[in-house]
Amino acid sequence: MVMHPFHPLFGQRVEVLYVRREATGRMYVCDCGDGWNMKLDEAATDRGPLPAERPLTFEVLVEVAVVVAALAREDR
Image (cartoon, rainbow, N blue to C red; front, side, top):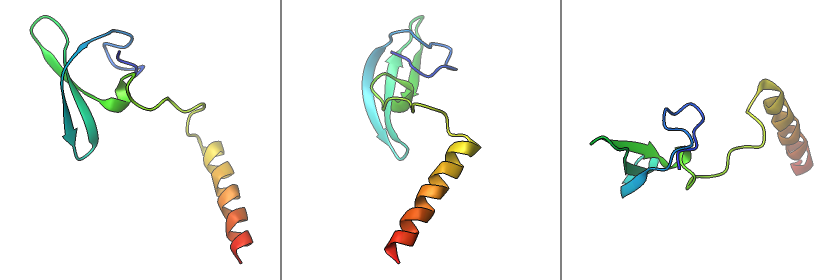
């Protein structure tokens, strides 16, 4: 199933014809009907990792920086 929210086939099931390994990761070549195939990155499918609980924002990055700084202080 296509899970990427901005993909034109979002929410639709497509048949996986075969899987390819590429430098960027696993890619699925799918039959999208009407005689055309599409290559989908694993992350755009239900076979990829679950989406993050919240988007990566400036505020989230600030929280990460605070944790990293605290860990760096502990190492001293």
